[in-house]
Image (cartoon, rainbow, N blue to C red; front, side, top):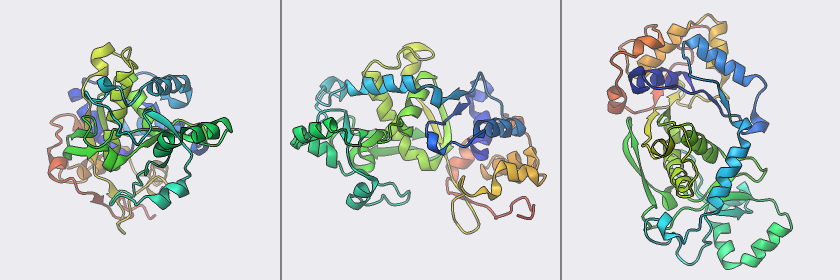
Length: 339
């Protein structure tokens, strides 16, 4: 959660009646920094953003993700009941929902063109076709222990499940054609780690999450996560989630926020450490200053005046963001701390 998402979240949990969950997404273990979870919780507490219950660590839920993957592996694309009354294949591709992929990142980049705007590279389906056309070769490679990831197959064009509409409170109804706009996506990496798209979908389903606020760079991912969620439910996974079957099938409310760019027009990112919470706190910037500035960026107040997160609860509305969803640009030193 970043500061701007945090400023929006408290104002939108059912008018303050919902629960806010803290999930530590530490599934990509090689990139996890020591004590990063402690820094996150300390920053949230400093900002006045509280959460309900104990933090949930993805690294402690590997057995759950394994169960979810096995459930998906039991689905066949020829199962018309799971694909809107018709087969999800066209006769030239594998019928497995989950299939092995031996392609390297370089292979995929060489065969694909990035999607305009978000540098998304769509998988061209090389191994999906290979499994249908040369199944014995694929079986031999698996028997040989060749390094591979696992991908989830999208339905073919024209299938009832091929189009997903994300209902977003900032960007409106966003329609995604899964085979054209996303393509088959990794759910387990070649190094054995579970992929982000699978684990967050599993967690949201089992934890009863129905209100998601995050950056617009994940808008495309929302369509994919809804697709994975439906496939998990088709497999009977998640009906024991918080609240039972009704909660599992509850509609998810999305709000994807504009991104923040620096003065040069480059997106602020974690690797750009100049505006992280530690630096701001070290230079004497207060939590109310940060919250107030983010609230101003969100259109929740007219000026970047200091305020508490609780001050934003009354009269919270998405209208200002929906009316102006363009990315925000800020100066390199918005708090004049001499960076």
